[in-house]
Image 1 (spheres, helix red, strand yellow):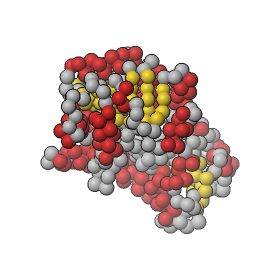
Image 2 (image 1 turned 90 degrees about the horizontal axis):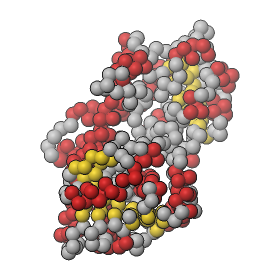
Image 3 (image 1 turned 180 degrees about the vertical axis):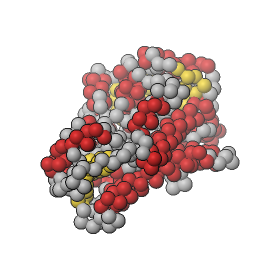
Image 4 (image 1 turned 120 degrees about the horizontal axis):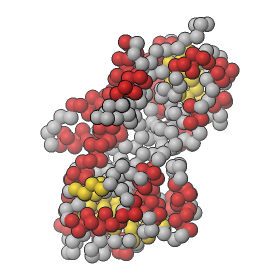
Length: 438
């Protein structure tokens, strides 16, 4: 098939290269001229394992192309909208880029084509696009509108596309559902074919439920700290129950990224528009926001309310490992608060340092290595569980720091490892480790 994708961001690019890998002819369109030129040369604008190699291979084989204008729309059998839907001040999704792309597609798409909304959009957006194209723009021949939400995890997006748990397609006719099923046939994925509104809701409901699991576990972690229980054992015992499952039961400093914060807030707004007070999800958001504040309080309890002059190293800055995405990363509010309290901050991230520099206070110093970051530090905060941070020997903190004091926001190490290393170690939902010299 000939496929045109509006948006060369994370979702659009990953989807495009994977569809090209399946043998389709894919054209990706973006208004950012610099990004398009960069992609034509085989360089993705973001870090994602495996993406660069897949992009180069399909460029060389002529299955993927990049454009600035919409001249490719009339040739496409399937047109996909994969533009951003940023959060507005009131929590609602900003759909201006979605509607702009839909207008261009509605005016130029050939008869019999299908317009697929890949972007995360509120329930009923597909209906609005349908009305926009056929009533406001006055298109004479019908253009089918479908929903095909993405479920990509940054850091494993290629695998999540080619070997997804399920593929969700929402449309109003069997013919459209069947054609989109054919488009994905080489992926051999479990398929959920439903109506458009249900497909739109599946995306929000899925992310909201996963966010709920994270906040629930962080609440359990707080209780564990006060009762002497160990949240790691609790999570293991819970996860073996097939009704619960082991994923998203890790306690930490809260969720971040481009999806969970935005989508949970948007779903609260969607519920509000139909006069439903989504109290549970509001609590999930509140717990997540408070998790970072609790982490700061633990540091203050150990080093004092005022951190003036204290040298603190931040290890890991991206919201999760294997990505350079800094959107809603917990490191950002933590760094700003520590800076306000007077701390001198040194940060290290193996991939995201350049992007992080735009988000963190100007006074933050960036180190090239873990050793450089922790040298003469009064405390270290582990904020992202990158492999090189997890594998860094705990005994080395004794060598480089003034005194080994670790605040682990991701439970990267076992308590036994901390005890054997002879360091002071504070984690989430577990007892603190204090060496004898304390």
